Image 1 (tube, one colour):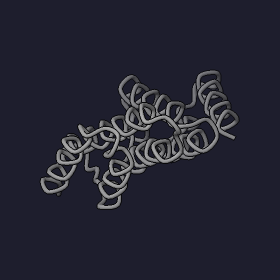
Image 2 (cartoon, one colour):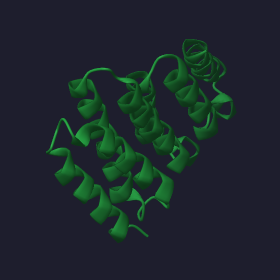
Image 3 (tube, helix red, strand yellow):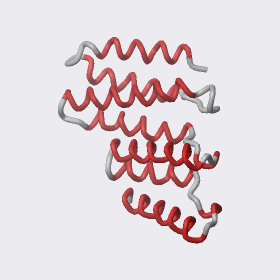
Length: 155
């Protein structure tokens, strides 16, 4: 499903260019559907890559309809949390946790300037995932404290 959704995005871009019609361009909602489909079928890395692609399209096209929104970030964060829960290896779990934290931190940094927002569930999800790594990776406690402090500073 994820690859199919990504194919449709490319088709929309091609049609828009071919016809010279910007109204055919996908919008952030279309991207969010594809990001979610990729997260569910291909995993967190594929979802993350499409969000990065969306960010690049937003910068190059300078179109507000392509600006990643809170949902875009939430899908990727949740996808990394899901990977923490499903990975067998502590190293893979820990790396997935760090990616979830990086995306949450990135969202926190831009939430005021882009009118985006974090939710308590995102923080709780990351902290819950951190708990799965804490016994085997004690340094997780420092990461969890950073997330807790970020939640306190969040609007």
